[in-house]
Image (cartoon, rainbow, N blue to C red; front, side, top):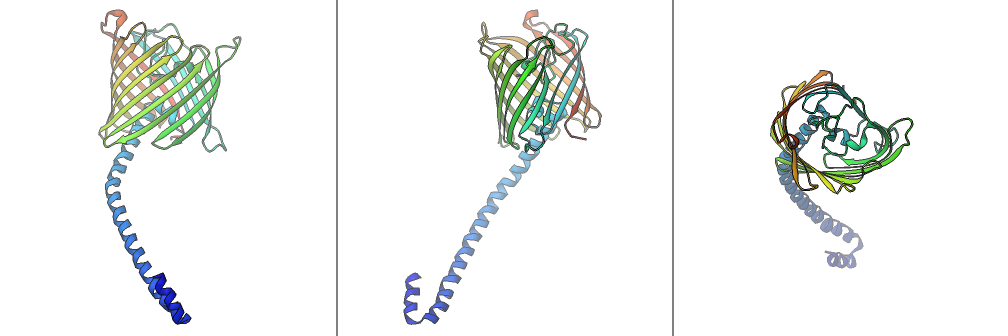
Amino acid sequence: MFSFARKSIRLSMHSSMLLVGIVLLFPLQLLGAEQSAEQVRQSDRIETIDTPRDYLSGKFVGLASSIDRFFGDDRNFQESNKSVFQLDLTRVSGYGGDNKFVLSGRAKLRLPATEGRLHLLLESDPEKNISPEPAKGQADVNKNVVTPASNVVKPESYAAALRYEKAEESRWHYSTDAGIRFRGITTDPNPFARARGSYSMPLDQWRLKAAETLFWFHTIGAGTSTQLDVERLISEPFLFRATSNATWLYDKRNFDLRQDLSVYHTLSERTALLYQASAIGVTNPHVQAMDYVVLMVYRYRLHRNWIFFELSPQLHFPRERNFQSNPTFIMRLEMLFDGSK
């Protein structure tokens, strides 16, 4: 076409302008139209495949996130970019209980003018919030299983930290904390640091989520916690989740291991049930199971979206009691403030 245009220029400058316009403009427009139509057809085919998947994935992720928020789960606290304040008042009866109320709490405050990147953290017993392994005398970090308790009524320590946070919604999340832990007015404050990253991957009707936490505390030293969640939406009111956790403490040279199989059942906007079976173990001095637990949690929203009440009957089968069944009953009142009304 370019050679034809050059020949036309030699014949007539005026006619060349007209010819070049006709020859170049219209074929290119037609070619562009053909390419655009082909791209549209390919795009339509891709969207035909992706639209149902994106809808199901979004519905799946939305349901899982709403369940985590309803149960005040640690996933909601760690990965929500909203300001969150959580206060728990727990009473444990039977195995692991002292018939006294245990108070615990934590808060994450989103700082203004930071585009949601910086948060101020306030929490009780921060070194006990590094993994789902229950801490003695305290309720579990995901607020289900407890272990034999000493006479602890209030938190042993408090902490304040500054968190830098970055995330892509429904995919990955990263945060790093630097803070100070206070045990009492007369004791010296101790620094600590944490970094956590998670990545979520949808696989058809399943979702795979991996999280890694690195930490250092003056009290327990350095360590790491690895968690893997495998989730499936059974039907809209039922969500299945298998959670595997391994926490390594450098000073003890030991892995604390835990496996949870959970089914969340949403009964209504105010009521939900959790059915869970757990196995808890250690690797030092050798790999062994320390406790098996089966439980049910009935959770009811008392007032709006921020006051909840829980009843949780449990059966423990601890090694220290030759794996004989030991019943436990937990009552919990929780206040959860995160901007929801």
